[in-house]
Length: 316
Image (cartoon, rainbow, N blue to C red):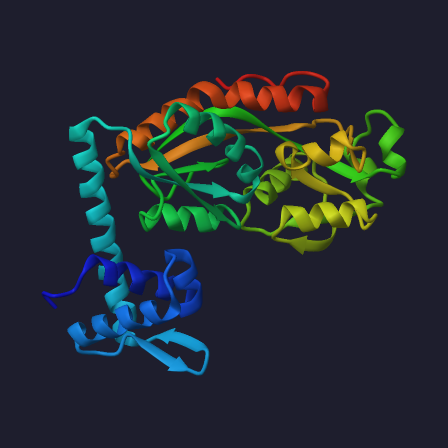
């Protein structure tokens, strides 16, 4: 396999990730025939088929599954080497890959606009995951340089640095009876259905902790993995929800939904910027890490204060 190229490994990894030659071509900005050719050349060098093709369906062969493990290691090692060389040059250039839980997508792009003004040589790429569990898997696979998430993973050796408060609130439709009742006890929520995030999400973990503390069992009628779909369901009058304040700013400002003033809320968590301890950060990654630690809290306080009527408590 001495003639295997980095390009072939990258193409193979993308096809394996999406189990689609077309999707891999889109991600790599190549044509599908070019992707097919690269995979065929790789299979020729390896001497074994790496994919099974049945019509439009693609699956890894057993050999392909084993080869993918080594391909990911090689790609990660080459990226680390590239990052190390950038350090020697002392240049804040290159590619920076940031992983986000879905809730963070509502504010990180706004911060990135300012970051790129200060660091125009950095090519920033975002990987938005459906939930915390998926982002932890990406960290473990060395697919992201930094992760922005709420609850840091205890199962990995990481550096997790809090940079801003993360309030969670209970929201209701615009015409809901709890909208204008003043503060209510948690027990007052009992008659109303709840639409909630899936169990592997950080939002669900925060919700369960809050209700467990108040010895309350919400009437969950629906689980969804999308904040956007949950918001649409709440606005349609299907129930209440427990969501990050950072996901509902637009709807609250436009009167499409309202915060229910429940005792013990907002439920405060923290946002963290996380990286593997074993990973040597590139100058670009270090620059963004310092940037979000310096600027993240002020940006979110400006967002949160008008919605809560007060500034959230600062991060310790």
